[in-house]
Image 1 (cartoon, one colour):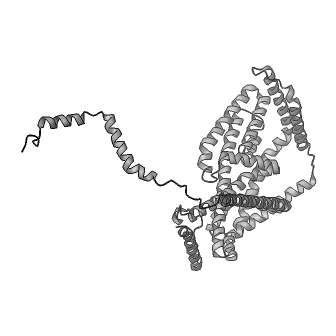
Image 2 (cartoon, rainbow, N blue to C red; image 1 turned 135 degrees about the horizontal axis):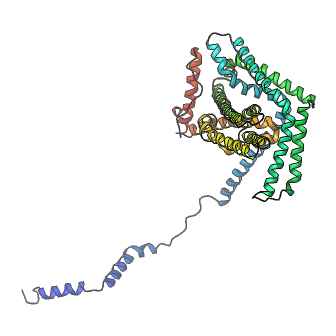
Image 3 (tube, rainbow, N blue to C red; image 1 turned 60 degrees about the horizontal axis):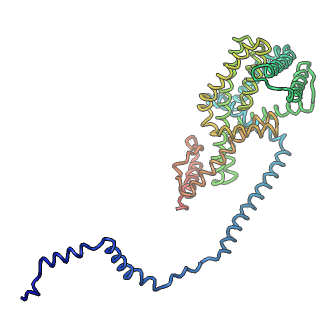
Length: 447
């Protein structure tokens, strides 16, 4: 081997050192150049061409337009249906009102009727006993408070007017120093209206005989309908299922049962809350020696069936009477009493008793009462919340069916209100099982 062919360790090391001594940036440029030559350049040889559109934009815009037009047409049809329904309700309102009132009253009378029927009392006799007992109870309360109201109603109006004047003077001359001259016309109209109405009651002037007779007819029809509803009401749902068929019939059975449970729960819960308010406020007014304490307690009870607005009105009336009768100190104590009772009601009783009964937001309750009172007065304010609660039941049931069809829930996730535990008819149980299978099929179709 020649000296030229022999490896020179020093030269090799020197070569390695020279290669390693290259600038890192230079080495990086060489690597990038190699990548570009091997990978990038062959790709650049083929020009990039945008893919041709598969769907014309005009077709997409047309589909969107048809979707908007379809929903607009549905809205127009639904609005027209609401208008027609509203006109129809106005035509049959005089006959529909006793039915609605009878259903509400039946939710209160049904528990004692069911208790009597469970003890082998005939259905008709049980209903008659409950109705007569309720009439006697209401008549006794009216007879108890009527003399004091008749004797002091005129004085009550005068004291209420004086109380309003005192409040007005305090607002003007007190620490608030509010100019009330711009509200004089409105205040005077309110005082005049109150004086006219209460003076008519105190003097025994009966005005509007037609209206009084209509109220009497409505009450009589309500009692008669309540008798038949309580006596034969358990036959209504089977008749519905027989008339409409097993599928639609069981849907109606479920919805109506949920509505009945919601309505009954609301009325009983509201009666309990109103009774507690009336007892505590009545006892407090008696201790504070406020005039017409018993009458104010009764007013508080019935006003409690008009949520939010009724309690506020009854409380304001009690404070005004205490102010003009016993002075500012008594009025302050009455105000503290009413606020304390209302806080107990709002934070303890209503959440416990009404959350499961209605499941309505407070804003919906307030809007319902406002709309009902605007359209139909006091009776509208009384019926607004029950109607809103029953409509909410229908919406929730449809929502559950939609979730079932979408596969979000199963039939086992639904809390069915209709029960077959008390049914002895085998065909009815089979129909109920078929209905459950059809509901389960709704979820399977979506999978």
